[in-house]
Image 1: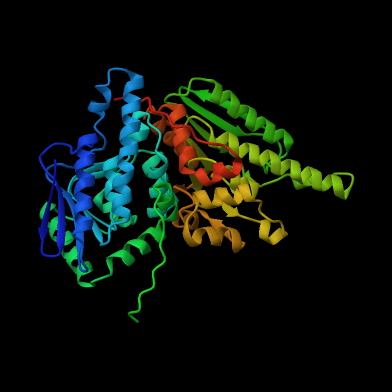
Image 2: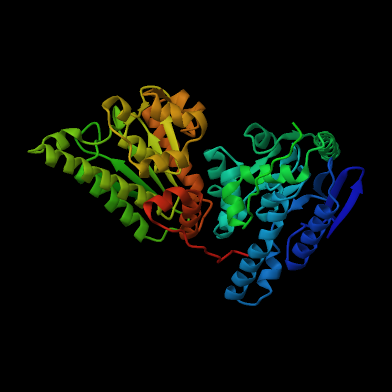
Length: 239
Length: 239
């Protein structure tokens, strides 16, 4: 499912196994718990990298689990439940007192893409993997906090429209060109290497974690509001 | 005025009439809004709509001759306000249309004509002999809030300022670079055919019309708030 390891100043969160790394209530609980752990152990100079094994970063919510409810109504309720359960995950990432990097070595779809997008920096593969909001293709509307995330993270209206209204499957090259990801690299090893490199460089700045988190929340006020996060003003005398 | 043609799953809205500039007056507005209602009333899964025009103009904005033919200053203002109201209804009708929409801009578009084009999900344009001109600034006419919200929703960055605050006559290539249009084509026939082809490609995605419209409303939530419409969550997924 998901594991957390510490490598020097880096926290490395990994979705393990060769499966689609889909999120159901159990996995979401696990993820939330690990993020709490990261927050508790944070120090100046910390950084987080989220990565995955196999062909997928994450292919979204566990729709099989939703469907196992046995009825259309039941499936819709389970889906809605997972959408609600995932809000604290995004909130945790948005409030994490350290820089965050998503090392996207495989496909990131729906809430999987949303999870990646909730990191400060996205690094992706050029040769494999797509970013994809599948909702329009499977006749699901977009939750309010997904919309807010897209609005505040992706500045280009055409890109937002292409993801949400067109169900575009965007590869690394295009994602880099259109400003969705920081950079795209030729293979899995390169992506992981670049992510570590970026995370270490960010960590070296030794930013005050709480201040970093507050500035981040200030960048995404609508999303923060929807997630119920408040904004604290900070003054520190280190001038 | 306008006619609505059905070609398989495609709706083709054609701006017709001797009025070569296809200026927006109560007749043309009613005609378009009525056509959109007819399109909406039919089954919409796997449909798409493309709006085309012929001649030198796509749509040159409000019929100011009609406005100025009023008997008094008061009536002139009333006529103008009526057109603003109609334009708002037009935006509402397009935003709620349960299918992808494309505007094939074959010629010049000004003011309300640009609003008409931007009501569509995708805008294609002719490379030459076609300019976009927000004439409002040069005429000393303010742009009311619902239409400002449309510009904010659809156009990003400095392009928005250049379109609204600079009185520019924007040609095809420039409009493409600014992200206002999706693609440019060399002649009226080419842009019209491209519009129809794009509509066909999008229709083949077989999207659930109602869900598509709700995703669109979520994407343009600020505009919807100002227009006073809400988006409804739908979860009838093709699991």
